[in-house]
Length: 85
Length: 85
Length: 150
Length: 150
Image (cartoon, each protein chain N blue to C red):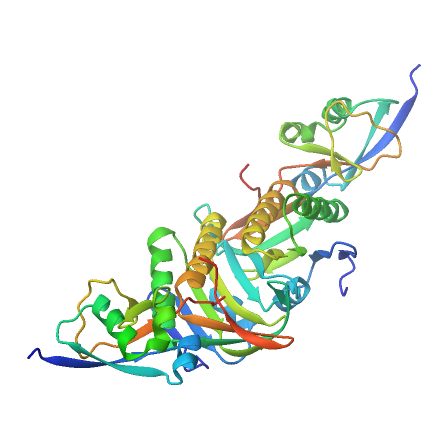
């Protein structure tokens, strides 16, 4: 069996309101990528599905590429379209 | 004999200091142009000569073209290179 | 720094603020002042009374604070890499803001004004596109999260 | 208007100031604030401590006041003809100004920030080229009238 890691994904604004919490736990195989996380989010929390296409994943305060590998210590956030300024 | 008009030409900054006054009287034929005024200034006040090339004439608060005709009621100023801002 | 979410980069004088309190323009100009700078350009965004045909009554801002401040730092670093500037300030309001209040300030001082203009323009454009900050609009009859156009 | 050389155009909200007293940034932002404006760009020029390799100690400004205010009006009119702006302010300091003090402000508020940036840039460029204002620089060992490069 593959070793697993658990990540807390931060949620903001509209996404936080949709889910009713400011973070969501996602369990992934060790060595999973950002793209894997996005797929897992769809399953873990279907209410996020309509927003995943337009949202970006931030890892350790930086927008991440789809191929980027994740580790259990990473600070992960789902960033919906921004509206600052 | 041509009819004459007398104009007070305002002087500022360096020009005011060179001449020691904040205006200078110039007598011109009625209907004289801005170019005529510049020529007359050279004669009336030789200390202005080195600055006339780089200075502009303002008539009634607007920079004037060389061909513009002057009348006795005009508010005339000699504007050396500016340094605002 | 009076504000706990404010950060300051000491070596390259840059200021990054996220504040629940109103943005103080005096503080902005005080920070940007530099005896070697010939010019300073400050962009100020204010809460507008209308948007998309709706009469807006107030705005509310939410941020992923840690990342927003990190992004402010990246914006300032990119500005310093591209233009010769003296000081950079980025300040975004959080929480509820009334019509006419300042919600964002991007300020740059530089020896030459062309660089200050270009750098400030780049700063606000990138802040609007990248900083993880969200805006909820309150209008007559409801409220909605509003995003910037891409 | 607290200042006797200040003029205000009521129909198209524009403010033109020439003042012996220091420029008040609060007043600048107060005038430019507009509930329909999304952005405001303020250019601020300050007295620099060096120029042309000299250590500057102070500046002194002289203006042909009537014409300078008329020129401010023409600049604001040109801005309004070219860009869609809400408010325009031009303010120049007169008399003696210390290092670090503000000597000029050009501010524009507009619905869209691109227009505010372009209009403010145009305003300060034209003010520096056309407004009948002169600057005397005081440096260690003397003083001199200094002109803007064409």
